[in-house]
Amino acid sequence: MIPSALTSLNGKVAVITGGAGVIGEALAEYLLTWGVRVVLADIDCQKGEALSGRLGCEFLQVDVSDDCENQRMIETALKHHGRLDLVFLNAGVSSQSLSAPLPYDPAKIDIESYRRILAVNIDGPVFGVSAAIPALADNGGGAIVITSSVAGLIPWALDPVYTISKHGLIGYVRSLANELSTRDITINAICPGGTGRPDTIHLPPGVALLAPEILASAMVAVATDGETGRAASVVANRDPVVQFFGFGEVEGF
Image (cartoon, rainbow, N blue to C red):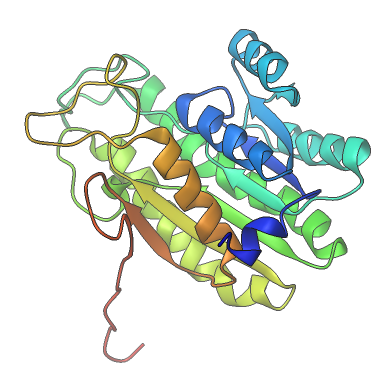
């Protein structure tokens, strides 16, 4: 039996940042299967246009670190489709993707990559949430899913700057959840392990690679179950594949 949350997706509108990447591609394909109208946003125009042409959806070139471009992204989705239901703030970069020196040396900070990681990974979702709230609220509510990482739940000595950004996103999601719920908007963080194709990503021995299609279905499940303020880890070869992280209480708060 098909879950009712999926059958009810038909005709809804989703925006995906980082849409030209492997996760964005898998997510777009999955949403299109359920009748969702998809708007892809990415800074990589060549890949984005090629993908949108293949899938038959829209593409916008967007630098998510720019507040005005986030506003334009949401305005364009509304102009073309008249509504907004789902927002997947998935764009992200790491020291590795920016070719910054690894392993990280805190005594020799690569300032350019440091600023870029925080701009894309923190500013991007903050600006994206801000831009999306009025459109979602005007439509009677909706769902926001922010792509964090397992590195947002654990220490990762190889790339602490990336880890800063991913921890920050989880704090942001948890802090916004109650206020956004008053507007019938849910917000959750998805925290994948290493995700990609075997020919495009290399993980340490013994670490399994998560298929993008599995992550995509998990992202949509988290977006449509009606819950909010959570961090859901998604790691290969686990049962269940989606596991919600339990945060402890702090005495006095």
